[in-house]
Length: 466
Ligand SMILES: [Zn+2]
Image (cartoon, rainbow, N blue to C red; front, side, top):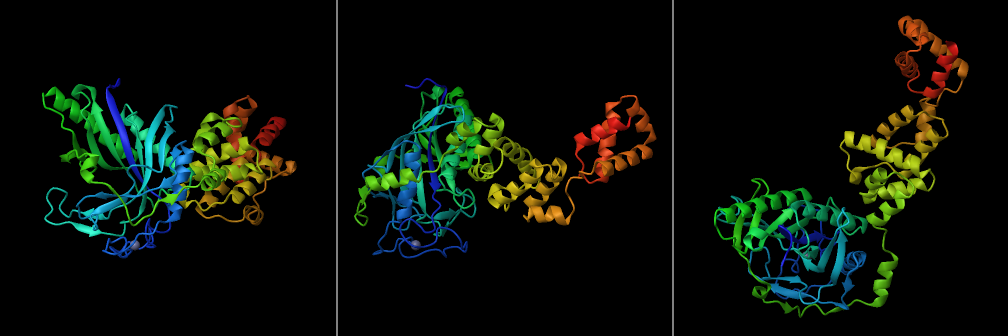
């Protein structure tokens, strides 16, 4: 039935970046005091009636259309019955028979296509805390702040053949969600349940639940592959079961034998009438669809190096900055400076794109000064370091700190001569044609002028003196 050694399929739950919850007007995020963002609807009180947040439908459609899904004619919700403290009304509102989106494709960075079986909308359950760990706690604490938050569940076909591919899938998925502006990496949770099986066991499927982040997914699956191989080699049988991932210990533990969908007793939710997904709505969403990272990458590659294009297109915020800067600045210059200098400073200061205060207009001002030769590269680099810390008016800063390049040749010549007098040994070597001492002399002039001299011009001046 399968060809590969390892078979992996994922069910990913991504929280959608809305202001309010899926069926009530409680805020989706904000106050972290336990059980503070709740109302009778998200607490599941008897008699409370859910009302659908339309933004969630827009977001779901945006996702489905971006990955080429078929879209259902109407949005129908079902009740998934189960008894557990995280769901006070004893059922979760989700979609069952007709998901909003079906049959899409997400491409890995290698170009391999992963088939998406379905993507549907559902509500998040409450958060549970087991004070002494999941197996040893005498009681469990429930926080309903998360209860009723909107999720999109994305179910892949079992098309991945290594933990590394699963990691790559999560990365590509997050990029798409970010580019569509329906998911915020800072405030939204993304979690995956992974189905994994190996050839040696006859592909007995094990589900590992609740893995957060793409690094964790690779770790959890690598562990699980080894565990299954080990068990088979010792003659043990692999059980079709659900396991939990303990990130702290780096192991998976058995939770329960695998339940099937029939066990949940789905019924159509009588409180929520089906919502029409009209052709007009789909057209509107299509018209306003942002360009995704693959399209950006292809576009950038035409103008700049593939490496620069990859880095810039990998983050939607960086790509947006780059696009705006390119309206006024040569794309090659902008690409080089954003990738090398902006990212160097951000990495050094450990600043994430989400926290970046610099605006494209600051970069445009800075790049213009460098391109027209008003400031040198080295002054430009120093200004970039300051700008990332706290943005300011670049032109004013350059003027008030007298940072413009020294264009007066006689002034430069004077400084060059001063450096020669101060370094007779190096001057002798330079006379003998030593390039190392030429670089040294140029460096000295740069130091004295605080980087305000054009290095090429200095080389010419030194050569003209000797
Ligand atoms: Zn509520």
